Length: 493
Image (tube, rainbow, N blue to C red; front, side, top):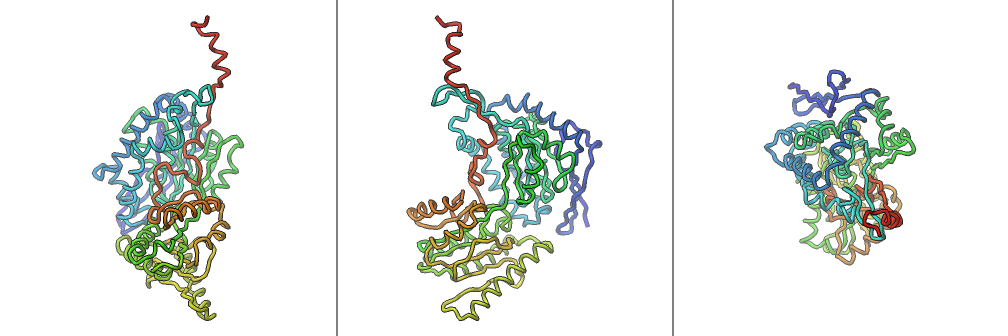
């Protein structure tokens, strides 16, 4: 077996020989990758926090947002260049650590990186700030006076590793609000964040000390506690239990922005189910199921399909199964560990038992069934009666539910309001807006086309919040202060 070793993380100003390094091991296709990740003690973490704060005050906070966008765009341009060494590293090693198909990762990276080009970033900033210049200085306020937005001096990121390169999103958010950043690597994908930090330092050397990338196991040790004590804000991704553990470690004055488990689903109206549209829609739905094996918070778990179209919900489920089979041949599902394999087996068995129980009841017209290949690499369960919105086993397992009207699904969707985020909707324009009102009231925060569920637009409001506004504090000069200053001006009569 060929063994490779990569040093992950990014530690400006620290001698690597003084740092404790842990090794994370990944194996795939006869290759063994050993990733060394840096674990800092409390003294080192305090020193790193001070260094990042000071550097960001000297360099990052003195740049305009437009200048920062130029730097990010240059870095992203290199990531989009398949001849660039950083991009080549990403294509080679991210499939190894994640287990995802190489071609899926390649296409996924390109699509993801394109949302961070300069034009998209300007839109991103404008989405949260009516006047983006308020990130650079005081700007006139409509009510009088002036207002300015200040980002954190030290923003801590706790990244999840379920999707490759996920750290890019919050890293860019931190840069746009001029925050010094220290990020915690996920054990499942410990590579990209450090690569991007080094790339930014190459593209614009004055930023080299404005961020750091570290690692700790689980809830963390004294080093993690020292970092949390220094943070002005903490932006965290992961399971709800992990997020709760972070929350309990933070000072009450620290701003905490968690992003936890979510449930995605789709609604397919009868208008989308003629013999021309339905196969194409099933193909798009299959892409949403296939991308990163439903590991994203935006991935679908259930499709509610309306009866009355030329193509029945059962037939749509069959189309979906056929498209998942096609995609598996092009992008094979990753090899599952024992826990994930058991979860998929339990889900498939429950679906088969339900189908057999329904058949034994002799329900008229019942078509409940599970469609899957012998390998179990994907599964489509179909149900003829309304079912709760609940998570599948992921790994390309999807539930299709036939309903007489899409409105029937709204109550079972609303019952999961705390976990809702993305809904994919296929319906005529008037119906789209009517359903959007009902879904928004139920707790949904993002409505997309089916096929775009797993590729959010640049600047989307993650979990219904503001990506940048939530990170800043607004400072106002009231009109009274302006008026009181006028008599003190050298030109005053």
